[in-house]
Length: 391
Image (tube, rainbow, N blue to C red; front, top):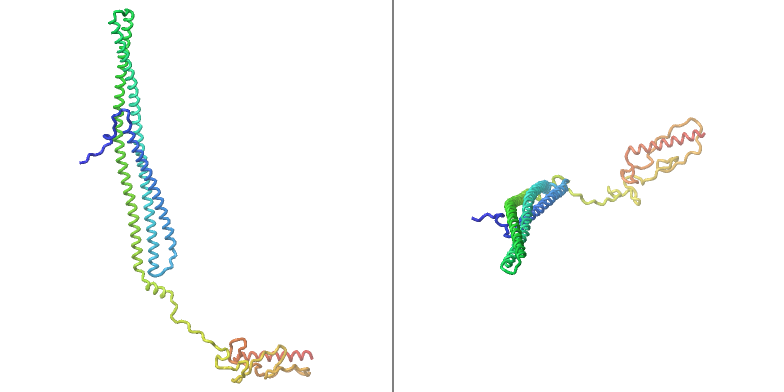
């Protein structure tokens, strides 16, 4: 069975002044924070991208609102619009999920930062206290060593003075007092040195305890960070898979609709709905104006064969015409006497034919003939009345 890795067994240094273990742990915490921040930014940008893509899909689907296609192809285009809207909804949901995961990871990173700050502050205090006491111990040790060397020198001087028979008593007493003083100084330095060591040991023990707590806390934080980050990335993959599955299902529905699209059926639907007929227009034939009924009587170079005369213009107002179309001069004088009525009815002045189209068509209907005769009689009566009044 593999032994579980532990921070508390892996970040120690035999040098009491070394901080490499705590430095390595704090660097890892900073790297983890940076990784979390990068993932938070990534998820936020992915969320924006999914939402933007969703809006773009909606805008694209709106382009198919006025679908004029008919038949199976029209149904396929309608399915394309509907499934595009479903894809848009799927990507919008994916964007919302990614945004929620980004917020979740951001909050987790903030909580870890608070815990890291607490443990780092405690370790920093104990480390500074340990280093400060170690510096003091080093100084007191140097002082103690110095006092020991002075005491040894004074002891040697005193012994040499005692052995010499020529040493005055006064010098001997002075050497003895110096020896005693140096011995006392050495004792004081020794006591201070030992006391500083005890203080240093207390500081080292406190630092070691803080280091153990920090290692355990940082390991738990790192464990939680790896687990949470892995879990969130797993959820991101699930979100992407879900969006892809929905998009693939939408594409499959579009394909199924397209499979039902039959070209000939669509053509037949258009014919059934919009067809006009199957009879085509015939060729337009040439029609001779003068020979539509095999009659050439109205041709300007030919005489009539059906008893009609060539067309003549109407007489001007104020003139009379005879039955054969010749103008009649008005009488130069009207005899006195009782007024007479209109002259007897005359035949139509203009021969009326059967043709009725064109500006020069002849008029042959009975109604039109009567109307022209009435006009002539009214004109003749008016001429007679005017002549009578002048007389």
